[in-house]
Length: 160
Image 1 (tube, rainbow, N blue to C red):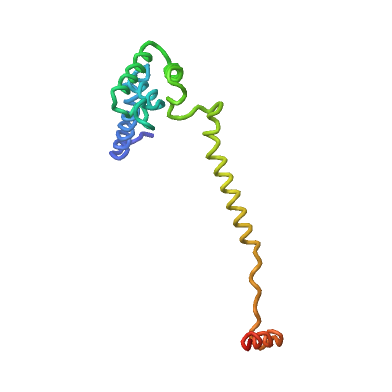
Image 2 (image 1 turned 90 degrees about the vertical axis):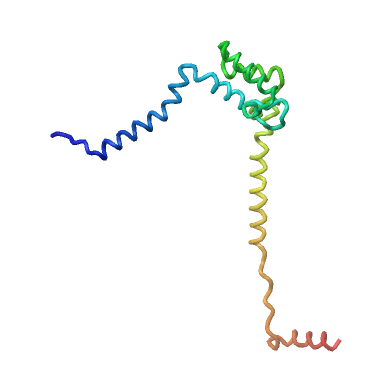
């Protein structure tokens, strides 16, 4: 049985081939080393800018950041891994140079605090909701004229 290629099927195959080519082209262009510029940017994204508070090194245009990025590139060219380059900056400037605090030692509190706060707020919300549901409804006051005691009390209050 012969298979026929319809124009629709051929067009679909061409679209799939173009999409695969577009997805694979950056990987091929980077070559074996993963692209030095891309690797430099990955390391720089993990580090804080030394002059701009809260900004990562990769997105900062200052001269100091340019020097740091050049240092990262030089170390990567020398054969160091991304982790080794990051460790170099930590050893020179401390863990504060990292965009994300390490998940060890005293920094664990920075990671645990949001989780602990969320759990505490959930427990508090549950307790408030539970207390609100436990409250007894207000007593029903009988209509006037149905209780002789209340009628006498009302007369005394109005006269008094």
